[in-house]
Amino acid sequence: MKTGIAQLLLITSAVAFSQPENNVNRREAMQQTASILASGTIASTTIASNPEEAEAYGSQMPLFSKVAKLETANYMGQINKPIYVPNSNGAPEKHLPSVSINGNDLEISANHVMTEEHYIQFMWLKDGNEVVLAKELTPTEEKPVLKAKVPSGVTLTPYLFCNLHGLWKGEPFTVPGVASA
Image (cartoon, rainbow, N blue to C red; front, side, top):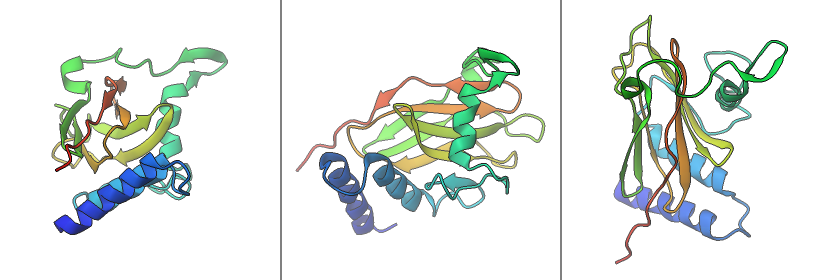
């Protein structure tokens, strides 16, 4: 992507994040920026930037709803007993999301195998309690990775879901401010 376009997208996101009177909210600005910049690099996966329209593998449930429900799914008739307790099943070194930040470039990854029998099925980011970016992965991908450009100052929490070992939640992080020239 050309540098001018990337700078324009960052400026657009920064304006939306810093001026609450704009019609674009933080979530929309981040989704638009991340999905535009990520769309050229992630062709074989589903990236959702519009929760109302995104569908995961043709299902009727939008991808944002699907990943959000993984955190709140309860056993039948047993409220407050979640099916997927975060970080409780499997090896942490293979499942905890790893965060790499370079300026406004963000990469979430995991040191995990990707086979038909065992793979990372979903990766997503939350801003507070709201899913702001989600990706559905396939077992044929080489490595579970979610890349995006995010505005400075935003605090996000990375999540992933392993088809065998369930829900994994990383530590919240804040994207540092970019020094102005």
